[in-house]
Image (cartoon, rainbow, N blue to C red; front, side, top):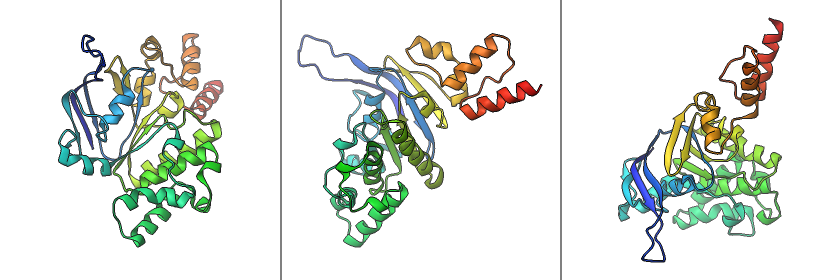
Length: 280
């Protein structure tokens, strides 16, 4: 779905004498159709900049980005690329454009010039996909943070993208809102086969993905399944990250001689492993 080939990028400097700082430094990355990839890294590592390359909001200073084989740098590909890759931002208020939920979700399809009956179908389909159909007549600005973010996701889904990129969509939400949004994202990936790229600071969210990519200083530091990436806690902590709490607990117990698996990610897996150990 997404192919990043030796991508370099720097933001233009306002001062001609200042050499622009390279935000991305030779990034190589492949994202397969239908996969769920979590992108991790501390602030300033380049992950959000990379995400904006996926739908041609930014273009590489060097290298190239392909979306389903289309080069994002080619002007004639901008429209089809942005139809294929939808983006959800951190603050849902930045994506809400109407005073009624269903009108907000219809904004994208209307701009595609679709017939009214098709727009109606897409709006209903998208709202049902995020479990917000019953709120279709509400004002989005009176909803909770998690509900607003689900409306923002519905607005992207109504465009029928093949891939959805979420840039820290739960950063401004409480635990309940985070759970609502993540459940929606996982369901879209699992039931509809949608390609998902999730940028997050929460290790527990990353553990839900099929694959975790960690960035540092504009490069890919490590890439693998959550079990493989989070097993290397020392490497992650060296770049200001951590591991899920169940993983950290099991690592601490193993260091004290308790025989526990090294691939535990969730509280349920941790509890089951401890129970099995106590039985033995």
